[in-house]
Image 1 (cartoon, rainbow, N blue to C red):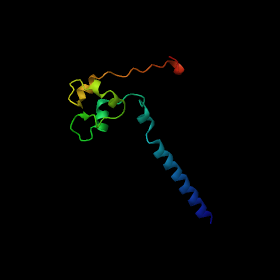
Image 2: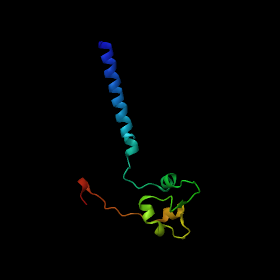
Image 3: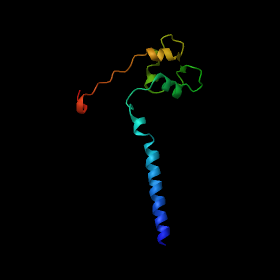
Image 4: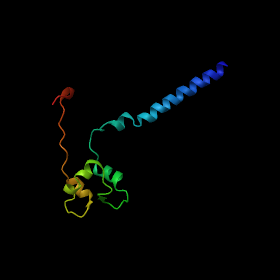
Length: 101
């Protein structure tokens, strides 16, 4: 009886650890820079669904979709990597020590 209960405790403990590990999802090194905007390559990897080297308005998501017309400087209906690299960046307030500006 004692062997069964210790196996149960071991299995329960391991499953709890695995749940925590998968819930966290990323190592501390991967979480560093999480507040940085995505790179052009990261945007293309997420949004260029048909992998044609450009992002259509239909493929576009989030704030990028809201400003699609401004970023599409040649007005061809697609965003190229060059257009994204030249796009104006959002201006976020810089925080000083302890969240003060």
